[in-house]
Amino acid sequence: MVSETPPKKIRVVDNDVYAISKICGRLLDEVREKNFNSDEIFAIHLALEEAIFNALKHGNKFDPKKTVDIDYLITDDKCDIAVADEGSGFSPDSLPDPRAEENLYKPCGRGVLLMRSYMDVVEFNESGNRVHMVKYKKTNKS
Amino acid sequence: MDQDNPKIIVEYLSDLAVVTLTDEKILEEADIQALENSLIPLIEQTPGIKMVLDFTNVQFLSSAVLGMLIRISKKIYESNGQLKLCNINDKIYQVFTITRLDRIFDIFNAQESALADFD
Image 1 (cartoon, chains in turn cyan, green):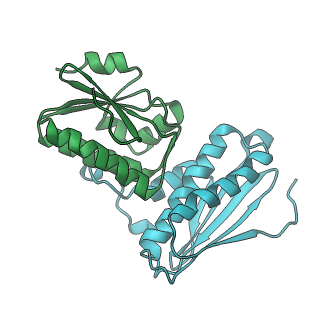
Image 2: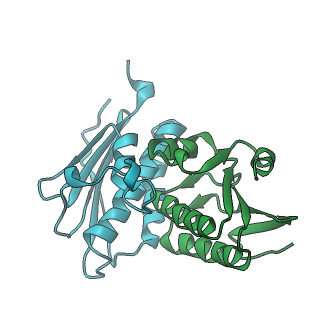
């Protein structure tokens, strides 16, 4: 049953990487309360970590004057999260495939791949500075 | 026998170093950097090191940790050493397979089999 509750909002200020675990912890507590299974919780956790870290590092370039906004809605059926930064954005389709032979030994560039692999919906806005992700609860689906 | 940074426990077995990661979650940039800073001296002090990284305690990691592992493995192979990973749980192993890093790391179910595989 989808509630009519509006999305909750969290703002990450000062580009504080240590805030990520607190935010993830808070959001994941709500996911657990809705009885998502451990695989789904792992998936949401990983995607959220990657999205926030990308927003802080690649989006805001750790500029303390910029913020990251997280909107989320967790219902009995799905976990819906949007992460937006104040960067100029990027084109997700232009990212090199980190699984390609020539990229396997590169130490970065796997975040978006993981988000897409673990979430059911991953879509970026046109300018590429906001990602919207959804994980559906499998156990509630027919 | 050596005890380094709290993030790792290092045991030396003859010419082998078994490094057990102690954190359940490896996430924060500073924690990853601290882990890397703990591992690099081991590699630099022992050219040709044969290292096993044991993930028994690790329940969660992010792609930034994968990057750190790649940097560490390069450093080990550049010094003619060898690196093997073991005791990676199913969820984390899936992260390695999705990113295809299971192709570039030697990964074993148990520490004993990792140790037995060294040349």
